[in-house]
Image (cartoon, rainbow, N blue to C red; front, side, top):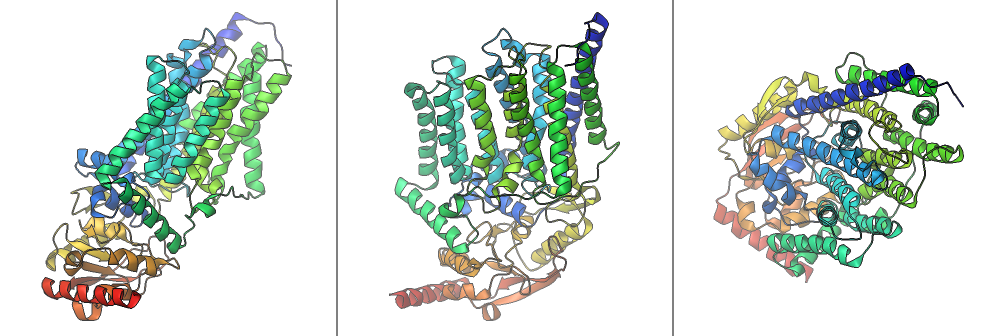
Length: 624
């Protein structure tokens, strides 16, 4: 063990370096968030993001489905007048501020049994929470390490988990103002999680109940507060959206059946898995090195000696300077992204577990109580609750919620007496998580989701018809939107006219021109069941809507839907539509561009309605 006779100079120097590291990293964290907000006016994804915006802007246009995230975010969309940049910025700020609050509530919980109860609201506690919260912004690049900041069902799921963490930090077995607020937060979190992704909404209560039972805070009268809040919110949503509980059940069942028929891996049976991940040699070395770095700095902070503490403070300050240099792009790291790169954040969890064990054996002041162990396990498994139900690999998806591994490490490594000036062992955890988050986010902004160039090359203004928004896009994307809008206007298209999207992957084009998507916010193509599901969805649309619907098609596209799915609704594209214009789609995900056609109905609406009814009657007769 490193030991040196304590000196006032050494102690003062160590304290000064620790304070400097906290200040630099906190300022860099604020700068990091400001950078994210500035980039919210750049780029646009025509697939997933278009789907999110179609849902959020007009959730009542579609049959209620499994996820209700569009209804939750719709008031925010209206409040911001449909401005896409503002909607993205709100998503960033909501996520970041909830993460800060979640970390502060954890620190409050950890310090409650000591005289350090006020640490969570001290400058040290707030600064630590701000730095640690930066790893929560990983949700903005989702599981692919690519920039996608628009609110979605995944961001709502993550925000629900953050609210749950706040509630867990406040909830007690007895009634008090803070405790009741905590139980209410848990109830709200359950409702939001279920609204975003029902599979996560089912997993979350199980994890929360287990945590509170182990820590002795589970009391039925308090639990009823959370259950009552969640249940009341669900009932309000059901009767507002579906009209009745029976209709809600039908809609959920129909949504599950469509997901099953689409064959994308969203079924309940397919959700019950853990999955595996593979790291190459370089990735394993990086994981081991990051784990060792955090572990060493925490260990040095716990040693009884000025030299050890001074070394840790110096190294932490150096990491803080590194984080600032990365944020302001003074330096950059080469980043060769691979599919499971996000699991590098497991280093924080590994360091927490190994450090806790080593410090326990070494006789440090750290004491692993049942409360801390339960909290650590709870945070460690929250990424699974986040990923549960996804059709992607759970380790890849769960890495977007790596912030909870940061919280798990904090729960394991916090000193027994968490008082102002004594939280230095936690700063390396927060700073390392921050550095990793900046590296990942920089990669995301240079490789935005399904776009052709870094965000820095998004310099051409593109105007969106329905929302009135303006975004800066790459020249090819901006030209595509401008051409499509001009073509639609010349052809007589008006904002909110219905459009059937047969491209299978360009729902964002419909949002760009202010169209009302027919059937679903995204008629997904490219899966074995896409045509069958598209046919079923269009059969549920009224004949009146279909009679006036335009069509955007991509006949040779890799994910296009067959025009035959319109047969049962009495529509023949060759006979009943005329081409307003053709244009080339931007490449986006694909190496090649594909010709798209924008088609206008040429039949009288009454004739189209009559043909639709005849075709559907014939289909029903055959089915009988």
